[in-house]
Length: 107
Ligand SMILES: Cc1cc2nc3c(=O)[nH]c(=O)nc-3n(C[C@H](O)[C@H](O)[C@H](O)COP(=O)(O)OP(=O)(O)OC[C@H]3O[C@@H](n4cnc5c(N)ncnc54)[C@H](O)[C@@H]3O)c2cc1C
Image (cartoon, rainbow, N blue to C red; front, top):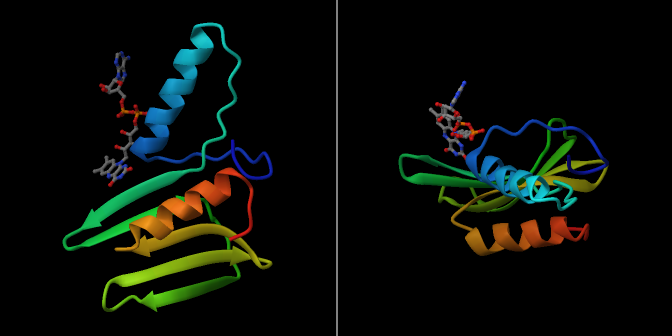
């Protein structure tokens, strides 16, 4: 569950790993909520794509940088709010976006 308490199915392994950690803590008696920001990366030949957040619908995509030269950060927005970020060779920006989303900060 993430963002406005929506139930979200994310089929990527970092999310699966983090869910396993929370499930294990709860089996040991802790009462932890799973609210990690969804994250995945995917390698497409020489193009690694990092994706943070979850956007099923958006009304705007902003592009910082250049997709063709494989140096970019895309923001998927709905009504001005950033729901997800996809990047190519912008690992630090991707991690920073994840931290901001974790804290509910605006991007
Ligand atoms: C081709 C492909 C490419 C992918 N690429 C990416 C990627 O680039 N990035 C990314 O983040 N994710 C990727 N994924 C998704 C990622 O692999 C899955 O989301 C993740 O592995 C899910 O983890 P899981 O533990 O929930 O399930 P699984 O990894 O499927 O593990 C389930 C385990 O349970 C076992 N099992 C099933 N039934 C039983 C049973 N009855 N008894 C005992 N054991 C059982 C299975 O054998 C399996 O070992 C990819 C998936 C595929 C198929």
